[in-house]
Amino acid sequence: MGKLEKLKAKVASLGLKWPPPPRPVAKYVTARHLSGLVSVSGMVPMVDGKPLYTGKVGREVTLEQAQECARQCVLNALAALEEILQQDFEGLIGAVKLRCYVNATDDFTDHSKVADGASELLAALLGSSGLHARVAVGCSSLPLNVPVEVEFEFQVQV
Image (tube, rainbow, N blue to C red; front, top):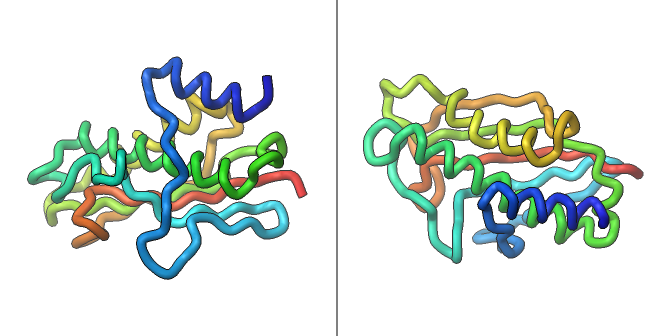
């Protein structure tokens, strides 16, 4: 069983669903592969073409729902990674960096706990190669009024 099949089996064992590759909603590509690094565009928590939740964390969206959104962003990013790497998925070395943007109320301060939803899932799926550098920041709004957007960088064999 190859790396991709093992990853998909792990996703299923966690009770999660591997999504189809996301499609850009504007003028960009979902992922770009350059010299051993794959940058995955900011992923939003879309499921079946709709946002998992909408609104601000700390008002319409709970911390737990925001963490669920961050996990969905990971799944969407992995689907984008699969699409760009195709048969080269065996060359995946691991996660490098994660940037988590949280659409939150002014008094919400648990941005890092939202990002933990993504970080913990990457570690569960990829083991030590899922560990990464990261930043978690709050913002006043995000596309489609989603509560979370996560951007990723992965290292692959050249």
